[in-house]
Amino acid sequence: MSAKNIKVEIQHLVTNERSEAVLQKVLRLLKHEDDEQSNNWWNTLTEEQQLELDRAEEEIKDPNNLISHKEAMEQARKWLKK
Image (cartoon, rainbow, N blue to C red; front, side, top):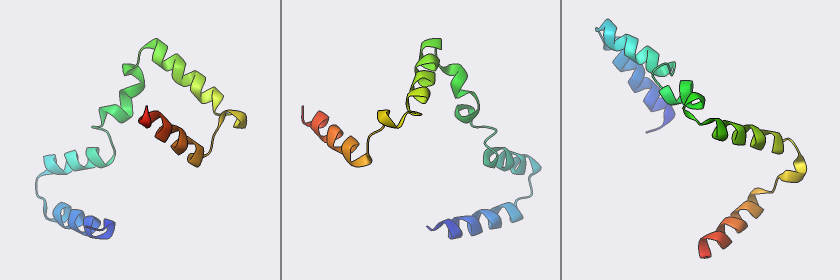
């Protein structure tokens, strides 16, 4: 189903829905308010994990620390063959 068809189907369902509670749930879902992962995932990490992600974020700011997609795929293939 294409994105356009999905939107049409959602629009049809929402337009014909009578329950305010259901519509509120759909609204929260579309706003990602019910998605605990998107709102609170950082707080679920340990301090060590947070520090590691902070370090990684700093590392990627230096272009010398980056590799091409092609090189990453080659490394992954070698690693998978082990």
